[in-house]
Length: 328
Ligand code: SF4
Image (cartoon, rainbow, N blue to C red; front, side, top):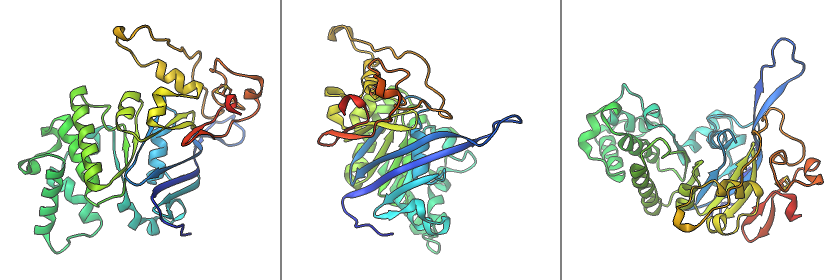
């Protein structure tokens, strides 16, 4: 089960997460929502991997499957050389410290009945740390507050007494309590004002440099992903369509879906007219995704083979992978 540990903190191989669908009285056979369908990628130590795609493409489900908030259906998740997807809940417990998550809505992710101090002390209590040394636990909680730029006088406050940005700082501090290697950031700034978004992103970048963290940064906002990511993955209907270094995202997008997403970013008038690619039709159902390329029902460059054969990720330049028959 052990693989050699190198600078890869996370390697995901052929991960699937299917949810059974109740088809009702007249339905025959089992149906599944294929939220994540055969996804592979890796994250290096100290790197940020941005994950983008439309709502419902499976990016948040992927993040939750990685930390086993939702149990993966199949596939491998190698965290620091250990396949955590194959471990029992009991065996996985020690590895939970190494991978943490920041949720989208800071208000919903903090217990409204607990003080900030109780919220930040909870990871220590759950993992049995500082059991006999409450003073040291308090010092650790104060250290977390300092790390995320909050004053320790807020420790006695409740979440509803803090602003949205302050609550998200508490959410980030909580993930840092157990000194993780990897943090899944699930749309961490999309519920915040634009000015606060910038503060939180700067905080995350500073913490990454200071603590050597790796991030999986999930967002539907390509501009935010571009700011923070080293590599970017583009998901559509449960599949990874393109993986590219962040510079390549704007300079050299290859997949027709990535190009359409980029064209939807509003541009200032002074930069000239932008060529918007309008995607026709709705996203197909993840219960019954189209045969061949999943994007073929909306792709302007669809060819005959696209309807029959599913394209696999192929490296077209160093570090740049695309799943599209245009590059066969
Ligand atoms: Fe379009 Fe075909 Fe490429 Fe799919 S494989 S994105 S349908 S050109």
